[in-house]
Picture (tube, helix red, strand yellow):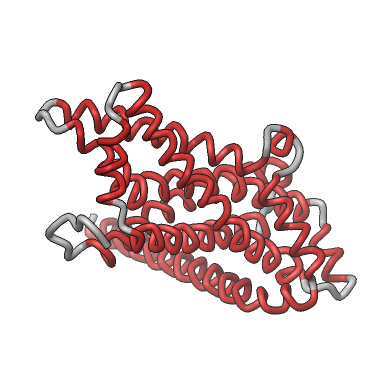
Length: 284
């Protein structure tokens, strides 16, 4: 009996050891790919400018059905539109319970910039641009198009991954600008036209609590989000296996991990910028 228990314990230790080694190997493989992809952006900008411009147009306007409805701009705009309206409705009702619903403009300026709009835009990026990138690269991998590029002496990482990283960085700023403006407009229209608050009261508290530095850091936060999201999705698409079903699996895993990354980046930025703050700043 003792020998059996010892054998089982040894087996569990060995299995745990092999699992840990596989985890370290996966981490090293991803880190190597991420480093190579980041380094390839310079070569992609120098040698593959037409492909970079094509990727920018594809990321910004979308392809197929996504392009038919207006591309990523419309999708992210609609998502942040409803997010801003939700902030207005919830904020007005919650503040109204304690008699200070006039501060709804404060919530719009404070929450939309710091949390709601960046997270919503990050989710939209992962669900539209990121998922499309994974599916596209995965389809190229299983159809051996990536191998064909290598055979023709075309570096596949700069040509396929580096160009898409540059495209994501180039399009995220205007996309997020549209998203931020849309959330502000939705919050104001909902508060003034639907909930009946005075426009002057809303504008006063909104302009008082809107800190320009927060808006700038919000753009920085979204740029970091987009960079991480594009790295994740290009990795899963570039290494997709298992035919069409494998591409679907890779896309699902990439979206799941990118959503976690979006929330993690938001938490890290919030702790770095506002973690030690003990008061609400009324102006910049």
